[in-house]
Amino acid sequence: MSRFVFATGRYASGDWDSAPLVPANLIDSVARYTSIDVAPAGAVVALDTPALFDYPLVYLTGHLPFRLTERERANVRRYLDRGGMLFIDDHNHDVGGIFHRTATEEIGRTAGPLVDLPNDHELYSCFFRFPDGPPATSHELNGWGDNLVHDHLQAVVRERRILVLYSSKDYSSEWGYHAESKRLQSVDNTRFGVNVVVYALTR
Image (cartoon, rainbow, N blue to C red; front, side, top):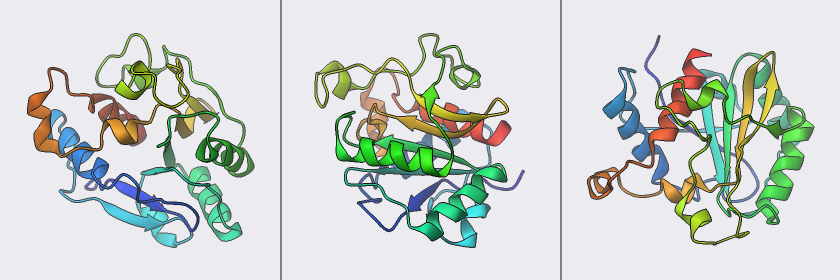
């Protein structure tokens, strides 16, 4: 396997770069916990370019409307068909928010319908074990956003493979701190991000 590069997707609408600390933090976690050969710096990839196909996993987030251009949509569709995976996280943690509404519409238009991912899916045990499904974020537990703890992530699944993983939990805020701050936590809350990477590289 070639060296894994954590990629953030750049799209024409919205604020694709709203969580700039997440990539370095997850790169640190992958290097810390796994034997994956991971590049020390992430990459930004435009969704409408051939370079998209260089990355097995692409992370997307934002607060503002998420709309793909026709060129972006066509390229992303080909990327998913050829084995790529998107992880899209709503930085608003609000199912009534504009990012959620537009992103879920766009996912359906591009890749197919989202369904609730069962909490016993292999995603939750492919490296660290999360027996209750997706870990809650502090934003959910503190009643921010839509005042809900989202029990499930959603996904577009084809032939048992996740093409698009969608989160309303705002992991982008939860993981948006400098990696050196992990030592201040009793439990590293980025561990689920490691599972997402491991799943994308092995399924």
